Image (cartoon, rainbow, N blue to C red; front, side):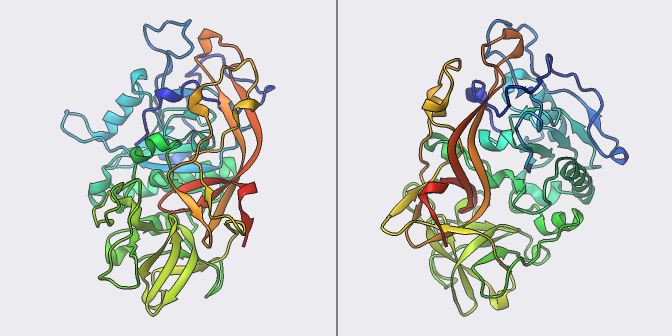
Length: 428
């Protein structure tokens, strides 16, 4: 489910100065969909019915853009579930649609898919930036798809018709925007971090443990496969969902089933061990994610995960696939490297026409990359932030791409992706 992001309405979105931006919202009428899906288009809210059109912050729930020709490359598709609970007389599907049509909700997604029959409703044009991921770097570069359901009850909600409709839509979008069909680009909301230390604990964990990533990737025609050799530098998590009923492996502090589960400072700030609770995402490695190998002992495998060595049962390598890929580590003599929740420019790099908002300050998150550990690189980002405000208000410098000199690397760090400055690490 998307986050409420009204605090980011003054954020900078990636747009080149020469790019044409739609003068009005909701110009689209026909859905962007494969013809045989029978999609419909119902616009998400942009203008308040009684809006003060002179207030550049008085709007919701997305920002008009012109992706990708405006400079914002669409690189990811993010899988969500609605998390809205039945009981109000409306289904979670209808509730999500109604929420996105209320500008006060401060959230949206590009698409919503119904559980029972896979009906697809588009709500935000894909060229525009929906407020769905709770992370502006990812919002700028992704398409968000909501699936009717509740993560803790996924076995009930995630139907075959929904999977198939979703996969057909994702294949269409991936072809349109040249998005690779792999788990580095087809993400869950749970893969995405919050942006700042102050709100890290609010990160969502949908679509959750019952989303069958292996089956879904098969439907995309892109099954999760080995990308390296046995004994190589990394492994891809590949549990048997049909046998276990879940898409993750539990992570322990030692190669012993009786050892405690690892802990996470965000999920367990008191330092207590992790738990088997479904929403305790700090001690679970999810299908399709790739991590640097940290060790093997008997039927147990260790990965570098969240700043620690995390062990999981892996008899006969039955729940992993060998993987390659680029990895980075801390330079010699450095105790730990700071990590970030987004890839934003520094304050000095914003033009004078854009009043700097302190919320854009580049600050480290609660996790670090300790010396002696390595993590898999899943993407590269030039620092950028796309400044957009309510179009009718005519705010100066609206729809401006602000770029910075810093190059960030995206890492497969723990349950979530994180960012590190490329200059702070070295290859390994």
